[in-house]
Length: 313
Picture 1: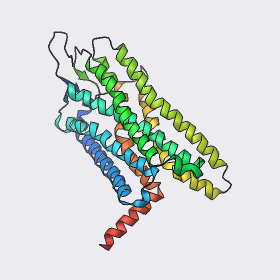
Picture 2: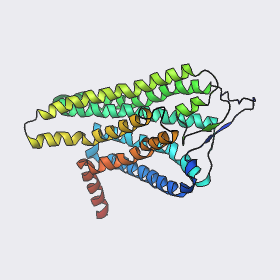
Picture 3: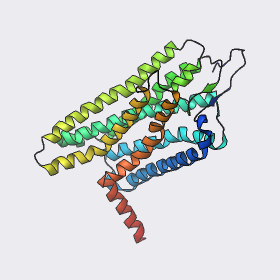
């Protein structure tokens, strides 16, 4: 990485400003974010264990849910521990390599989540709109292909942006006005031409967010049309209940993403951007296991079976 300042002194680290304007609230913020992080990891690990241990949940929908839970654990673990260290010990310094690595995993995991949510929407479309062909169209090979393609494709795609970022020359101040290494604050510190880097980043981010979003909309349009044709109220309720959790998660994820990157205008403060970023880095991963636990009868039954087996021992 070529990193120099205006006086040709090499910069080997950045300073994450985070919420430095709220120093008097550091302990309260630390406690809140730590509790959210522990709950996120515990809740998602519980879902993973339940699906692995209960053979009733060995179906495509829960296979994708396990992938999503693993992703959420990695997503928050990539950002929150460094933020907690900053709040508790005031350690806001991060090396250039560490910063690029954090952004790489952040970008890769965020993109993977978009594709996994689209795969889950496709799974619900087949289950509701093509029930007779579901077992054939969503077999084990298809599930593995969709999941592996999401993970590998997004990690490879984000690598191109990282290569271009690593070739930039950073100069002047080394302060990043954010609580993690995001793309825009990093690019703003460069004193060289960033047009190619920004164009590629825009193209790849649009591809992995907009295309899956359109596929999700198309899937749910077909699902809604099919549900409305079901004659009985009980049948419509049962069909809708199989995809309500996923629909809620999609709404939260894309809602917070849009609020963060589209809603803030040039007149909005960077502080507002940081607050909005908390929505998808902390709140959304924390609420996902809650949503799937509270609104999913299969998860309830699996938990009951697990607890009853343990009580017998």
